[in-house]
Length: 103
Image 1 (cartoon, one colour):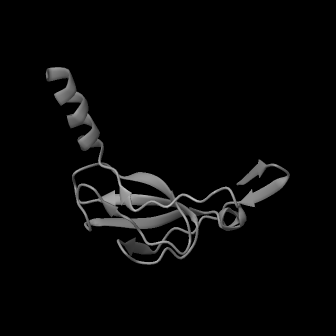
Image 2 (image 1 turned 45 degrees about the vertical axis):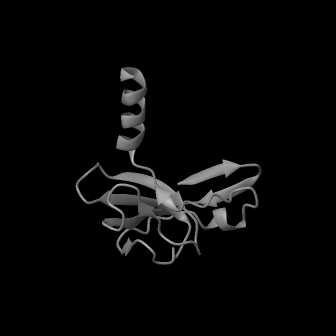
């Protein structure tokens, strides 16, 4: 699949297979599938090469990552620098909204 952006072409490669854990160095930038320890459904997150795989706010280190689509061009995109240290837990935000409504 190719994505056109500001006269630059990004080639997304399917590189699924290996599984990574919290704290390991991210080998390549791309979209990763996140599997949690039963407390929530899997989801996808974009991560950058060279950073560490983040922990989960709910299951801490009981989370794994697998590359779904690599995006090496993100490494050369100067405006794309988001560091994710912890995966947010949707239950936390739901509890906050519920307690605000019942108070």
